[in-house]
Length: 154
Image 1 (cartoon, rainbow, N blue to C red):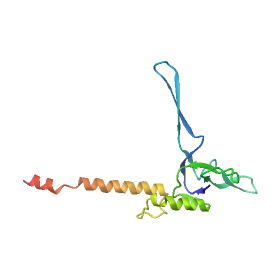
Image 2: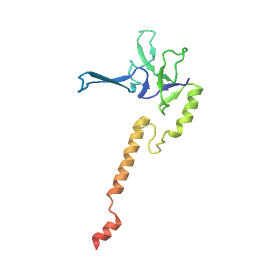
Image 3: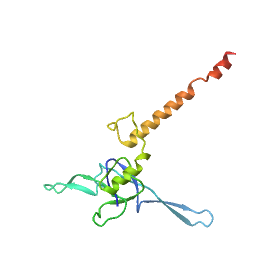
Image 4: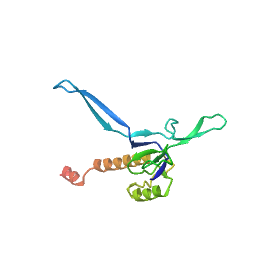
């Protein structure tokens, strides 16, 4: 069982998160229901998502907290959220098994050399890098083709 601390907001696939579509079948006129598994949003700044809140002894209220997720249920940590899928760069490994998983998946994570980590989360930097690549392709396509220029001169 690998445990991770979320460092940024995540959409994770967890049990019990479904979207239900209801429609009326035109033939017999009966209601048809379809259920789809969808990821759940966990926001690190939302006190409702913290499964390990920091409680002030003076006031008894939460002043911060953490979201800890795991790959399978462990009775030693019953508050951990069990998720399905690989870890992300914005998950801090908390045990040796989690560190091994990060090492296993690290080659899949694109390194974005042009933007330092201080300029947003990994996902934001990944989107910025994608937009930059898209702009480069668009400018290459808009440049006049040399063969076309020669043809126009003739």
